[in-house]
Amino acid sequence: MSTLSAVTADEVRFPIGDFSIDPDVTAAKRQRWLQQMAEAPRRLAEAVRGLDDEQLDTPYREGGWTPRQVVHHLTDAHINGYVRFKLAVTEDRPAIKTYEEDLWAETADARAPVEVSLRLLAALHERWLILLASLTEAQFVSLAFSHPQRGLMTIDKAIQLYAWHGLHHAAHITSLRERQGWTVSG
Image (cartoon, rainbow, N blue to C red; front, side):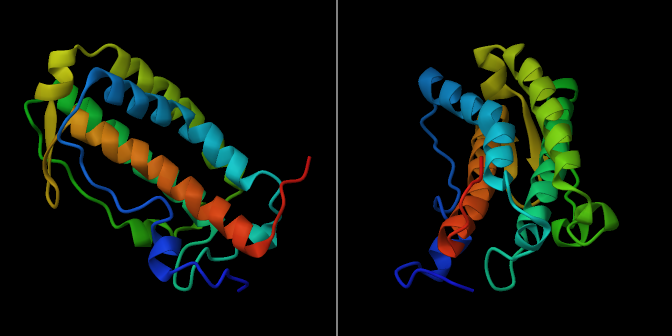
């Protein structure tokens, strides 16, 4: 693998930094996170545009997923996220179930053409943002689900996670492209 000598293993694993919750939510910050969620499908599609099968099947780091797996993972994770939000909107602080993302990345559909998941992710985010646009400021703060590892996640906290998640995985692919010298073709 051709890497830049100045890039550390942590920078490859967390190209935009590790996730942390901003406890000081403002309307402007919330709007920025929602915009990042809205842009995630396009950003991911741009990250993989022009990659051939060999490139799509190149791990972004040693022991890491391939861009193909990243695309399918992001869609899987955001499907789960959407369901968690719907549960928070329709139930009183429901306990959500986690899933084995590493095992999901090994199923047959995780080897499908990336376009399948890119279309699904775009439609999912369109619907997700319609749901989020229907919420009041008070609901962003009060509606929540209980995550087994993360604890109580309000909608305000969860949108931060999913906004970061989209940026994080698109950056895995774009930073791999940069390290490998793969240019985006027309």
